Structure formats: structure tokens, C-alpha cells
Image (tube, rainbow, N blue to C red):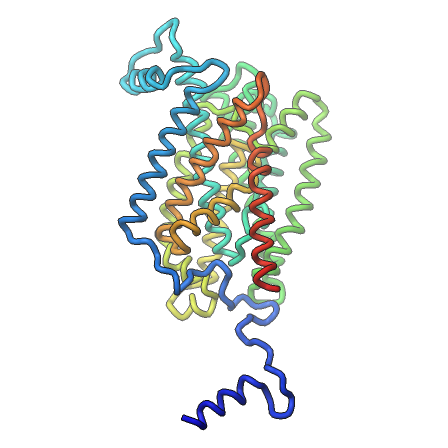
Length: 409
């Protein structure tokens, strides 16, 4: 026993005669991706029971229902919640709109917008969670990797350069009478914008992925740096296209959309998000265990049978698809994908089996509430959604950064 203690003391003290402890070996070598992430599940923390998690989900669902009701009730013309649900049930039952009532405001204007806010928020929560697992960095979101910048560039190119762009913008921003389900599927509308945004997101993904894998291997730090660089380049090119638009109204519309806007929501614009967001949740949820392993490091994930390269490719495709669809219908809404995963980890821990569905619910609730604030904070004027999320998210980013620097100090 004495020899063991002495041997331990000599090991801690370092080589004989130096009196210094050896450098830590738990950190991954520079340029590798084998070390665990700061967001790895804490083995010392007792995760909430399934019943506890279920009650949290039920609470979030009820809060989301209340927020959706408030989103439809509040506005330039306030409508009683009872009347809101009366209109909804009548329209779901197939009844035609009643003249002289609030059917048009509720069913054609506010319900699609509230549902779009919930879908976009849920999608951003999912994308942020998947992205942070992908790069094993708690500061990561689609904007950090340049995916959103690529999607924005593709959508702006479709609006500014594409044929029929102005008709599509009328439907997107609600500036003319061409909106609605039909106008949403023009080249500049929902389907065209989604395809263009997806193409831009995938192009950005391909560039970032190629740069990150140069020299062999895969390094999350290299991926992040490549994403930041390419994202800034794409943002600059997007600004150039906006300035070349020529039409003042079109330029203002694009700039407002780039800051995040749900003002052009119609039943037609819900078609793609209502398919893409649940599909993305199902794909990610089916790989929740693999995501848990990935957060512990590449070597750990590979040791339990996870194909790390294949999983990362899948995550990039899923995040690119979701980002493209969301950017096309709502513009660039920042920080939701950063804030939501952190908040959910504080509640249920880092297990993605619980984290993913709660991130979707929390993101939906957050964006519905933010949209209510944007519509009601100023009389006669609507704030861009991205402005409010930035005001909330920037302090969260600084807080997370301060924690990381404090831990590293």
C-alpha cells in the first residue's frame, strides 16, 4: 500500500527532479475531434424520470396552446378567446365564413401566422440542438456554420433575380393581392423560395464540409472557423444582391425579411414547414442515442458502433433542409437555435431522447410569444422578429461565453 501511494505521488509530481506536474492529457490534440464536448451528458447528474419529463412536456404543450390563443386574439383588433375558438371550430367543421364576423381576421390572417411561428420556432430549436451535437460546441447554431447565410443568399437571389420575383414577394410580405395559397408557390413564393434557400444551404454546407476536411480527419474547430468565414462571405454577397435590386420597395421588403418576418404567413406557406419540421424531428429522434454518443467524442461514438462520418453527413443534410425551409418562410431569425437547447438542457439534461422533443416545444413557445410582442409592442408598426430574438439572444450568448471562459480560466 505504501508503494502504491508513493508511486501515485511521484506520478502527480511529474518526472524526478522537475517538481512540475505533466501537462493534462485529457484534452484532444489540436486539429482532432476525439475529445468530449462541454455539452456531454453529466454522469453525476441524475436525469429526470420519464414521468417528470412527460409532465414538463405537457406543461409546455399547454403553455403553447395558451400562447397560440393569445396570438390569434391580440392585435390591432382584439378578439375574445371564446370567439377565436368558435371561429376555429366552425371552419374545421366545414362551415363557410359568416359575414360581419371576425372569421376573416381569425382564420385567414392570424391562425396561419400563429401556426407558422410555432412551426418555425420548433424547427429552429431542432436545428440548434442538432448543430450543437454535430460540432460539439454549445455556441453553435446554423448561423455559425454559414448554413443560414447560404439559405438567405439562395432565397434573396430567387426574389431579386428570379422571374416573377415581385409576385412572389407580394405573397411573402403581404404587400399586394397576389398572396395566398396560389401565390405562395410561385418562383419567388413558398416552394420556389424553399428550393432556392435549400440549394443555398446545401452549397454552403458543401463548402464548409470540404474546407473542414482538408488534410484528412475532421476537426470541429476547423468546421466552425470555415463556417464563420464562408457565412460572412455569403452575407456580403447577399447584401450586394439586395443593393442591386433597384426597386426601393423591393429592397426594403428584402431587408425586412432578412431580419425575420412572419407577416406573409398564409395557409399556403404552411405546406412545407408542416411537413419538414415533424419529419426532421422523427429523423433526429430516431438517432438520439447516436447523438448522445457523438457528444462524448468520435472515439467513444465509434466504440459503440456509431458511423460518425455517416451521422455527420445526415445531420448536415437534415439541418440544411430544415434551415432552407424555415428561412424561405420566415427569413433569418437568429439566436433561437442557440438559446433553446441551453434552456432545455438546464431542465432535462443532455439526453437527446428527452432534449429533442422539448427543444421543439420550447422553440415553438418562444417564437409565438416573441411574435406577439412584435405585433403589439408598437402601435401601427410591426417589429422584425429577428430584432427581438437578437435582443434576447445576445445576452444569452455573452452568458454562455462567459461561462466557457470562466471554466477555461
